[in-house]
Length: 429
Image 1: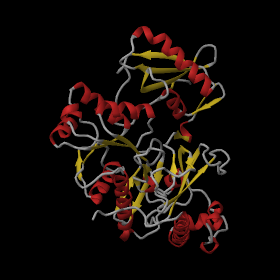
Image 2: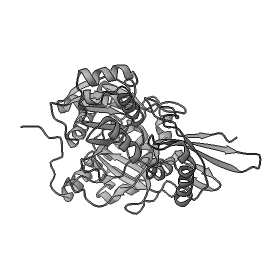
Image 3: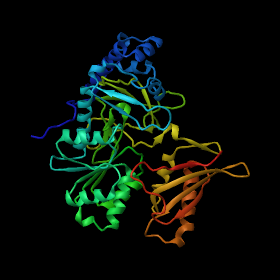
Image 4: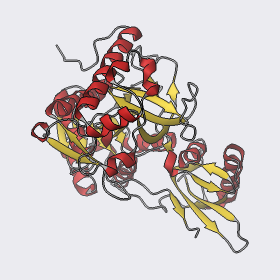
C-alpha cells in the first residue's frame, strides 16, 4: 500500500481547528524562545494567552526581510544551537543574506511537504526525477532531492547548467520528471529539439520552481519536451524552501499546505486584507516551524487567493501562480507596472514566444519610454513583424495603460539561461 503525505482532514472545519492549534503553538513558542519575537509581541501588547481564534491573527505584527537581515546571522532563532542541524540562506541581492536555521523536525516536515508535492503531481516509486536546480546554501536542489527520496522516487541530482550532461542523463537514465527553473526548462527544451532527442527521452512531467513564469512559457516547454504536465511549485527559504504547494493535474490553481502555514493576501500599500480573488502580497505564518518560526512574514510575492474549490476534490485551498513581487514594481509616466502584468498580456498573443525584455529609457525630451523586446514564433516570418508589433503595442496599451515601443526579434535572439532570466533593464538615471 502506497504512503500518502496528505493531511488527515475531511472538512474545512478540521483544517481551521488544526490551524488554530498551530497558531497558538507558534505564538507561544516564539514568545518564550525568540528574543526578537518576545520584544516585538510585547511592544504590540500581545501575549500567547491572547490568541483564542484565527481572527486574532490580524492583531499580530508583521515580520519583514529587513528583520531577518538585521538579525543576521541567526534571525528569529527560537531554539538552542544544540538543536540546529542545518542552515540555509536566500541568494539575496542587497545587504546580508537571509539565513534561516532548521531543527531535525523542520527538515522532516519540509521533506514531507515536498513529498506531498510529488504525490500531488502523480509520481510513483518508479519515477526518475532529474533535478536541475542549484545546490549549496540555498534551499532549491537539496529540497527537491529531499522530497524525492522521502517520496521514494529515484533522484538524479545533476544540478543547474551543463546541458550536455542533462541531455546524456535524459537519454541514458530515461528520467521521467524534470525539475528546474522555467528558464532552464526552456533552454533544455530547445536543446532537446535542436539535437532531435524527443524520441529518445522518456519525460512525462516538468516541475518548475524558483522563478515566475507565464502560461505561454509553460506551453512552449510542454511543446518542446513533449510532456503531459508542467507543474508550478512555489516556495521561499524563509518558509522551509521550495515545496510549499503545487498545482494538481487540473491546473486550476496552486494547492498550498494550509496545515503547515496560514496564508494571507494583503494590499502592500495599506497592509489591509484584499477581497477574495484580488491581487495582493502573500503573508505567511508558520504553524509548526521550530528553528525560525514566522509570524505574518511579508514575502513580497504577488498572487491572489482562489476562493472556489478545485474540481479535483482536494480540500486544501489554492492561490494563483506567483505573478511577481511587490518590490519589482517600476513606474512609467505615473503608471505602476509589475513585470507579471506584461508577461500575462504577452502570453495571450499567439504570434510571439515566451521570452521578452523590458528596457526603460529617459530621453532628451525628459520623458520615460518603455521599449519591449519580444521574439517572433518560428512559424511566422520577418514580414509579419510590423503586424505583430502593432498587436503587442495595442494589447499593452489596452491592459496596462501605457505606450510601448515594440521590437520584434527572430526566435532565439534573446539570451537563454539556466538560472532566472532578467526581464527588466532600467537605463534611466
